[in-house]
Amino acid sequence: MKFGTIFTADKTKNPKKELLHNLRNDLPVRIVVFFVAVPLCLGIALASGAPLFAGIIVGSVGGIVVVMNKSRQFSRVSKV
Image (cartoon, rainbow, N blue to C red; front, top):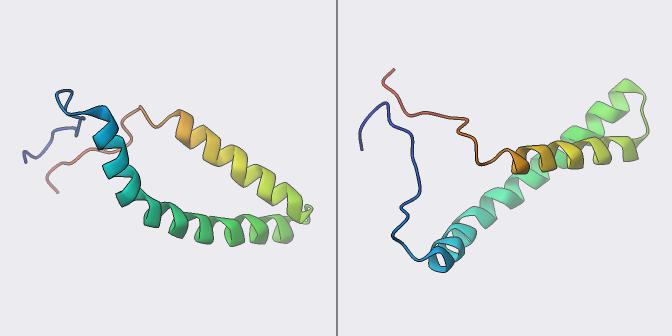
């Protein structure tokens, strides 16, 4: 692995196998993020005086925005 490079998917691999492999590895992370995000959204809604359902809606919209932008590179590996 070189420092300062952006990770990209290898185009020669089988996309279906890659999807299943990524899904199996990502599922526990997605569950943890869900269990952290839901109370956070509810707490922010409660603290701001908004209905709790508004916190769920805002969290859902935020999750959709992140998923739609997942093709963009948000992180880089570089020397510190």
